[in-house]
Image 1: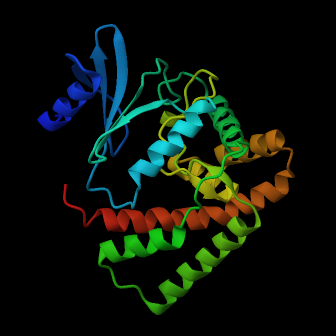
Image 2: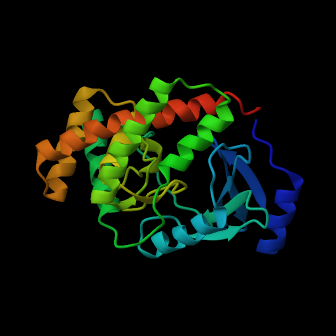
Length: 262
């Protein structure tokens, strides 16, 4: 059962200025989610996992989400706690692709459209620092890596750098089914890992997060290439080269997670 701390309730009550009712809802794999009702108004509350291994600047992410909300691509963030351990957002009443009865192919097509929409946004966010992320994961894991393993990691990082330096756009970097609404509203959820990055890394990340098979990966790539008016073979080659980079990212992340206390 999800339990919310008294200090969170107190801070929220002080900000909203009245009696509130908080109820847990199904949310992400890491952060906890709640609905907050005040009279006829409802808000979405996200309680961040403070033990996360990722180095996240919550104040910067809050500002970025405000920009995305103005463009109709994200829920409007309303309040970030003084400690940065929770965030209040506008409530958007709609189901996501995880809850949808759409076919697997239709879901893949929706994800491809969401990726293209994100990559077409004219905003400038800080770039993804994948090298620092990997170093952080390796440090937290406490693991010892052989020279050949370190060389292989550097080769993958070099591949990613070439792609990101050649062409970078705004990327979500964590686009699961649960982050895309079933309706074609344009709104995307959970922008915690948004950064400028190679779009092909973003597509590869989406495919791995959603555990796509070869057929589903092909559908996403083909539809993305069509929407972005790009050569399908070029997109396919670049995405498949990034799959190894994304897989290594999640491998190191998972290794670090084993050292974080529950």
